[in-house]
Each structure stands twice: as structure tokens, then as C-alpha cells.
Length: 156
View 1 (cartoon, one colour):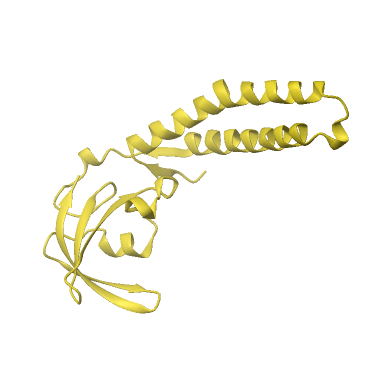
View 2 (tube, rainbow, N blue to C red; view 1 turned 90 degrees about the vertical axis):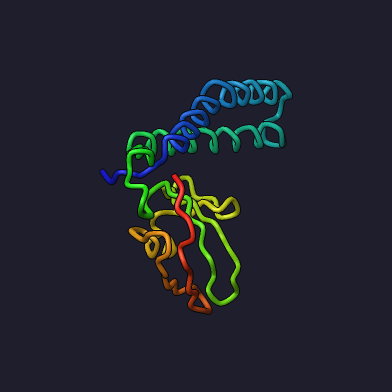
């Protein structure tokens, strides 16, 4: 069984989503199926088919979350060495070509949200940053170009 690294916050979010699916969304959808069924002919009942489709999605997501929670390895960044980039670190980088700064937080694959600056520990950028210290330079081979960064700051 392969463990999935997650931050305490990511683990809590998965548990909250599972709880919401089981206690709120599933019962509401069961009611929607019952109401749609009461409207008669199911073969042409769009509400019924939509509710059944939603039920399938909810059950699939519940099973997915149960699996991920069962395999989760909660890693508390507060316990890690704060001098170097590691899991849970928020890293400020300076693009050495453009002098533009960017910021990434290294999280587990289940928490990845590139729009919010959260990148997977399995991503090429995170792999290049792991173990680096403030002041270190790192080369990242991105699609289309190679980017040279300097690690400006590491926060946990």
C-alpha cells in the first residue's frame, strides 16, 4: 500500500469533504431521487437521471476519499528542518532572468492547486527545490525553456 503524503490541513480538508458527502450530500441526493421517482415514467425523467448520475459521482468520491484517507501519511512541516526546503515549505524564488519573484508551497499530490501556488512534492519544480537553502540557485527544466531561480526565502 503506497502512502500519500499530506499536510495536517490537507488531511482535515479530506475528512471534512468525506463527512459532508456522507452526512449532507448523499441524504439530499437520496431525497432528490425519491422525489424524481414520484413524478412517474423514469425513462423520460431528466431529474431522476440527473440525480442517479449525481449519486454515482458521490459514491465514487466517497470511495476515493476513504482510500486516500486510509493511505494518508500526515506530515507536520513544523517538525521538519526549517533551514532547507522540504515538504510543507513555502518557498519564495527569484527568476534570475526576469528578476520576478514567485512563491510555491510544496504539498502532497492530493492538495495540489497550481492556481494557489501549491505544487506537488512529485513535480519537477518541487523535486529540484527539495534540500535547497536560502541563497541557493536551482535550474528547472520547464517545457519550452530552462529557468534559473534563486531561493530567496523558506517559510514553514
